[in-house]
Amino acid sequence: MRRTALLLAATLAAPVLAAPPKAPSAAAEAQVLELSKQAIALRSVQGEGNKTADVAKLYKSALLGAGWAEKDIEITPVDDTAYLVATWQGSDPKLKPLIISGHMDVVEANPKDWTRDPFTPVVENGYLYGRGASDQKFSMVLAMVGLMELRKGGYQPKRTIVIAFSGDEETTMKTSRILADRFPDADMVLNTDGSGGALDEATGKPLYWTWDGAEKTYVDVQLEVTNAGGHSSAPRAENAIAQLSQALAKIGAYRFKAEQNPLTKAYFEKAARFESDPKLAAAMRALPAM
Image (cartoon, rainbow, N blue to C red; front, side):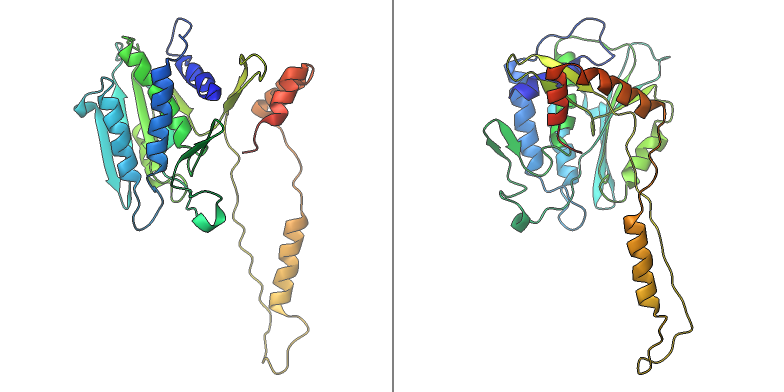
């Protein structure tokens, strides 16, 4: 799993370190895979039988084994889900905390629509399959194990590091709002639900690592059409349903004008530099669409 090695190394290279990170151990890579598989097998989907709290318990058990104390880990139930907060106290209480963010829930998956059962993790040809393998149990486990390796290695952060995993990002985001309100003074939030890296297929060396500054969001539009109406035995030429469908078709055909902000401008400028390097250009085109 060479991609695991790259991602774990990148996690260890977070701003909390002053020295270059060591290559991840085989045991750490194996733990990333095993915890990811166990988490994927837990159907953390909104509604009856939601096992998000069980995912939190799985992560808590792993953290306890890496040096976190019981008092430093909270699992808080909210409706049918839960959120996790695990605190690694820094040596300087004056510094604002660093938050490692992620979500333990996943989108519902109908087994009939999948080649493999979505909640039965499978590794084939070096790839991990299952609901949550990409969005986003694997990446949050990766960050968590990275911190666990740091702690087991004796590292002591200056600022407090908080693991804050929500439980309903894919639905109501109620726990996300709770966590945002709880940590308004964070120095930085690293969201594991985004970014990624690429390796040179020939040498296995890291090519680059991408970071997200923010995510696109959506907009809800409500359309209402009214007219004088009438009886169905004598339909009017101005039919409200037909008028509504025409409006929907116009919205579907509309294309918003492209706009840039400082983040997107910097991204395209950097991408242009990558395009001049054949290896980097090929790797960027190979990245999966999010």
